Image 1: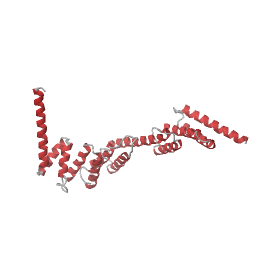
Image 2 (image 1 turned 180 degrees about the vertical axis):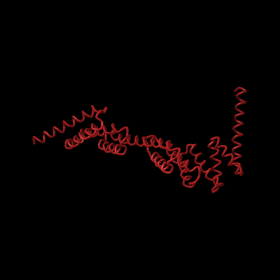
Image 3 (image 1 turned 90 degrees about the vertical axis):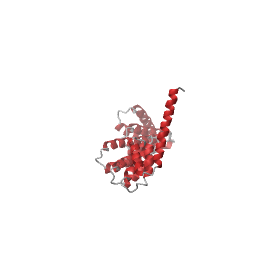
Image 4 (image 1 turned 90 degrees about the horizontal axis):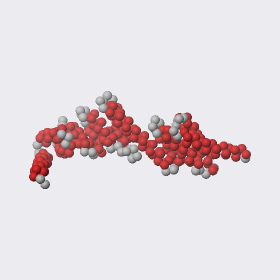
Length: 272
């Protein structure tokens, strides 16, 4: 190791020691005004760990005073910026209920929903956090209809709602993928009813048609005629809504095969 590098390393180590040592002194100090001032300085520097640690110490000291709302809000922010969204959401929820007239209240209302937004998982996972975020943001817009954050909140709501659409789509398609066509028809129709404007509507309606056809084609002879008739009904519904669909060739093939079975059965009935 060269002399220059060694000197740099020792200087850096000394600086870190002094910095940590200085913070330890602040933590042990009983001068609460000084500690509060240093916490604000760390907050201004976005040193989340240090200001959070100090404000947590000061919280019981200043409870019920004019500084209480500032301290509690910054604690909630500190937990948020350290990635503890669950704890932060709890902090912001308590804050908005406790300090209803604080200058921070509107921000706390927003951050309460934003914590759930940040913890919302990808569409194939459980969406309880997504639903909680939507509920919180809807409540925010009702409370603050003229908020400067209104456009931002609406954008976040669109993103969250689209995630629920994707979740519904993936869940409904799962039954088709595993070959449970009877359950697939129910799930796909429920998804369309829940989200009629989904971008997946065309594909879902085609999968209903295809599930109906495959269910009929794999049924015992006694149930085939009725189920192929259902396939024909689904075909007409699909064609009426998507006459130029990219799935049209496959849809017509299923329709023609279904009609052959139905016509054959009718012919047998007439002969009998």
